[in-house]
Image (tube, rainbow over the protein chains, first blue to last red):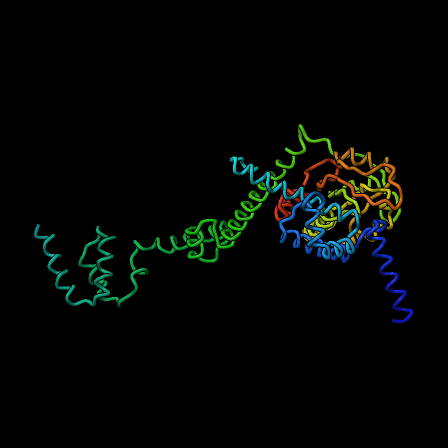
Length: 110
Length: 302
């Protein structure tokens, strides 16, 4: 309430907007907030067995089931980070799969 | 025969009369003056009172002289050995040149030498490991550079000479890995700093010079450690440094302002020695526990 609050909240939202656009680098607390939102989004995807939330069926399921988490994720993180984390999830999954496959084939761990 | 027999019987009779001390005296006299006639001596002795044996017979005349001689030798010995009593001299002789002081000194010196030897041995071993990395076939990483630090002042490779440096490449918009790694870098730096203050310089070089100006770097790095040196420059300068350190990075050359992008880059800590030569690349394959010890091994043995 009041003019002071209005200014401070607008400054906050301006900063958040800048972070989202990637104009400024997020600081420690902003990173933390982003990672928390990301983990919540990941948690939702895990619940619905979605790995790739950018393509195909995964995208549809994510849009249907995890819309709220996704919104928060996009709110708290820079746009580039959102894409990065979504891609990273796929890459990380594939990496794990590859390691599992190699281990089954009897590869030695270096 | 009869002559020799007679004195023997008289002497027996006499022995029963005279007191014991005189008997002893007589015996002494008999021993030394065998040529004398026995009876006369015996009577003379019975007449005289019981005197100390040392003074009476002539044969013992030499005794004072011998005492004198003993005194002389004693004085000589005193001069030679400087011992107050014979006992002292004897005890000194028995123990030899060893005393508890000498023993303690021996043990201390021996222990000290053993400790020093072991210490040097370990140090040489570590040095050999470091030299092996440095020696033939050493990767040619690092080199001269001239950049700007987070305070806007010029900072070059010459400023790193004389101290070890831990160089990390990154960018402030880095989503997850760089911040984590920079936190670890701060921990490692604190560890080394606690052990050997002032031997290590933590350096952060940005791969994204377009967005990371000195002011941005300053705010960003102050969140991790106040001692971090943040370096930036022109795109060309950064490209040269990255090339020298064999760092891959994917910053677009002419990114338009307002367009967000991420930079893909190598995530190694480069440990450089005081001459600016490469020592070790610490990557994510080294566990955070192992990394500080690797660092300490090299840095602490200065």
